[in-house]
Length: 279
Image (cartoon, rainbow, N blue to C red; front, side, top):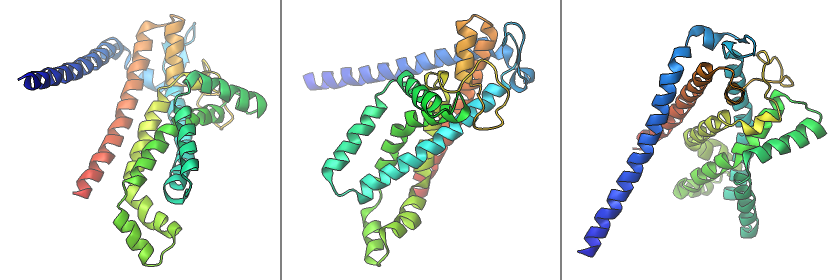
C-alpha cells in the first residue's frame, strides 16, 4: 500500500513539475508576444536603428543579420573542433587516461561562465592578436562557448553507431578513414546537423561572450570579418538597460525568440526525420 501511495505521489510531483515548467514558459512567451507585437512592422524588421537616443526609432535589420552571421561563424568553428575531437576520442584514442583527460577538459570548458569566455576572447583575440572588436573575434568566442555542447552530442552519436556495421566494413579490408568518411559520417549527418543547429540557437541568444569582442551599439551590416557587428541580445540589453524604448525592446525580444524557435524547429525536424527513416 505504501509503495502504491509513493508511486502516485511521485507521478503527481513529476506531472506538477512538468506543468509548472510549461506554464512558466508559456506565460513568458505570451507576455513578450503581447508587449512586442505592436512593434512588429516591416519597417522595424527591415530598417536600421534611428532616433535620439539611437534605437528609439527605426528597426533592427543590422542586428538580425549580425546575429545570423555570428551564429554561422561560431557553428562552423565549433563544429570543426567538436567533430574532430569526437572522432579522435571514439575511433582513434587507445588510452583510457587520455580519453578521461579529454572529457575532464571538455566538461570544465562547459562549466566556464560565458562572461569569462568573453573576457578571454577580448584578452587573447582583441588585444593580443590585434583582431579588434570584430565579427570574427565575437564568432570565434561564441564558438568556444558552444564547442562542448556539440562535442558531447556528436560523441554520443558516434558511440551509438552500429558496431556490426563497423566490423563488417573493417572485415572487407577498408581503412578506418574510409569507413568514417563513407559510412559513419553519412549515417550520422542528421544528428550532427541537429546538434549544431541547437548549439547555434544557444550562441545566437548569448550576449556575454560578444559584449567585449565584437558587439557594438550601432554598426551597419558587416562587409568583412574584421567589421564590428550588431547583435540582437546586445541590442536588447542596450534598449532595456538604458531605458531607450520598452516597446522596441519587447519587439527585439520577440524577433529573437522567433528566430530561436525556427532554428530549434529545424533541429527537432531533423531528429524526427532520422528516427522515421530508421524505422
